[in-house]
Length: 420
Ligand code: GAL
Image (cartoon, rainbow, N blue to C red; front, side, top):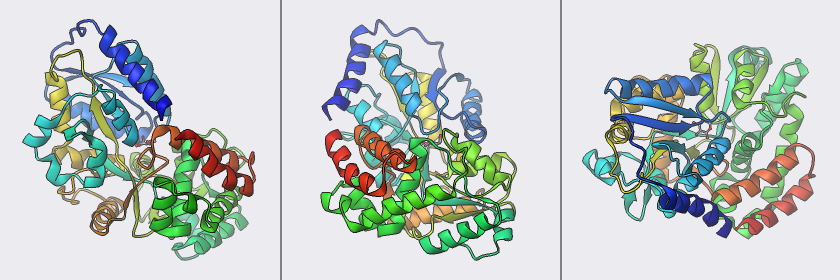
């Protein structure tokens, strides 16, 4: 915890201490740091860029490639320490609260109040978009991670019903393997493996185990037989990937499913943005199912934009327009249709969304109503960054054969405790 405070607070102190009069920005321009560099991500971002361009706001792009955003956050820390903040940055979950705690984020409350953000954005998302009663982030969407994305052509060859639980998922993947189809398209990066582990825990012990183990970090849950089963199942999934999975970017795994080379990918619904970008249609070219056995629960990951203080200057015109635009119903619909996520606002009609998008929105509404909208730990919405990274370390070592199931099961609670 102290380490976390140190790195973010130090970066902010450096910013506030060494920040000379903020370099004058051209009126109505925004410099935005983000990691949306895949085809689908860039297509979504283009909607924001155009919305701002139509209002005369110049977009200065500061992309940092690397799915999941850890590279982007490292770059951001370096910029802040150097006293060179962008206007805004894409950010997730607890990282937002860290920067808010360090005093680096501009107050968006006047914009939020004028545009009634409070009534439209789910409370579970607001927990990470507000700090000490002030809005400090503009949520762009609600992605969720407990999905599988299935090649229709490959599934037709497999010839079995859609999997609805762990056992039927294994049956489907075993059949694919017997037909020479790669069962599981996987990117061998820790954030991707951890994203899949979220769903494995969820399907093994339901929302109760997921919340207790992956969010509350309850010792009993972490050391429960169900968690041992989750680690066993994670090791089982390793037997369904192709030999070239190490280091593969998530969108390249998605393209394996798009091309029918692999049966399915376990990934957040940003993967759908890749299918859309490839002009593929749900039901015809691909199928979207909740990770088998996790139906009724949504493990979410909301992309948000934060805006940095520049000295004592108020939020400038470009930033104000960007923060305002993000939460308009028209932008929320146009962007999320392309990005693959549900809108952050629950009052946006699903008219423009395809079947998978409509399902994402319906599942979100259902989860809000049933209180089964749970933060994705892998995506920074379950635990703070230091603990998230400790989880990543154990999960990736298991998936890559550096830890046995028993070793990973024993190491997981220890690594979490050491990171607190
Ligand atoms: C997530 C982000 C998504 C997508 C994904 C892959 O963290 O929320 O919008 O960018 O990473 O890079």
